[in-house]
Image 1: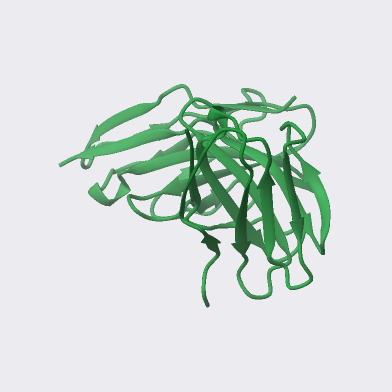
Image 2: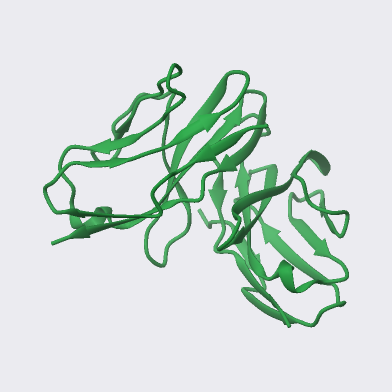
Length: 109
Length: 113
């Protein structure tokens, strides 16, 4: 069975400090990994996916198949990064999303 | 372009009743998925519909069912409501079944008393 683990429910970081939100997964196959974000009073939205290898709003995430991890990183946190972050996975050809329990990130001014 | 809409936004029902929630996808999107969000279990996949056919199903009892109409609008139904069904129900749409990006609606908050 596929599973996504986000070990931190809450994470507080000072503005300007680096951010790392952890995500580990278990899946037998070739998963596709995503980060979704929900800002206050907004809808859940896609932040980035591992295949695109893009930097979105300064965030990057690298898929480490050896460690089965997909941690989200940003070198310098900004106040507008405060939000709920969900790691999710699906398998190619069957796009059912399995979500982690989420991490609430708070940026301290 | 209008986003995914869900109606109603809030609902209070009594144990044993049934409920129907509605989702209108973004225009042109043909795939609709439903998720249940609770504090204890987080976001859990219920089912996905594409071209009026159920394509995927999560691990929920048969009391949870859904359908999709020819205009891609979708409904989900929960029969014989239980207290544990209290949750935020999210609908998400995407262009095609194999497209990766899902666009979420605001959700319907269901409270079962």
